[in-house]
Structure formats: structure tokens, C-alpha cells
Image (cartoon, rainbow, N blue to C red; front, side, top):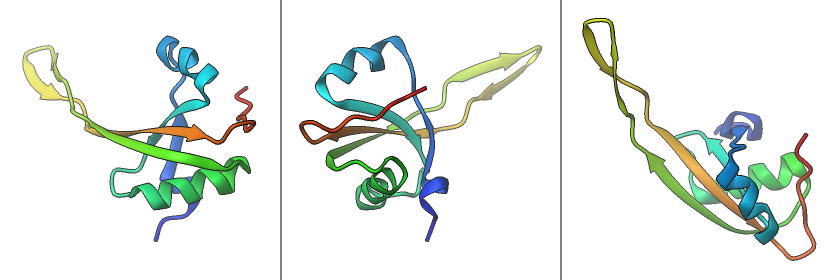
Length: 92
């Protein structure tokens, strides 16, 4: 089993994700093998908040080209965390 700090890799801070903070939704990049229950427990342990729902999405790799070779970026997993009313994560 992975530790909570290995499950949650980093916070996704984009323009779109900042708009959802008003709805108590936060975006995280998580380990590909982690399920929703593990993600929920990891977020509650790290940030000391109560999680209401967890939605996950596999983000496909995009085709890229470096000089003359074609390649692809890695796939990654995105988690959208909805907190309970009154809960908040302070992002610095």
C-alpha cells in the first residue's frame, strides 16, 4: 500500500481550478494505481479536512515531437476533490 504522500503527487493550480475553489472543489494529480477510497483517506490525512466526494479521470498522453523523433507524454490521473461545507484547503 502506498503512503498518503505517495498517492497525492501535487496540487493542480490552473485558472480553471481556481474557479472551482468557490464550490469547494480542488484538483490534484494522484498516483495512477490509487482508487477513490485511498485518495480520500490521503487527502483527509494530509490536509486535515473532511472529503465529501472524489471524482477521478485518466488524462491521456499527448503526442509530441523532439527534433525528428515522435513520442508521447506520460498518462496521469487527475482527482477532483469536493470538500464538505465549511471545509477549506489553504494553498500557498
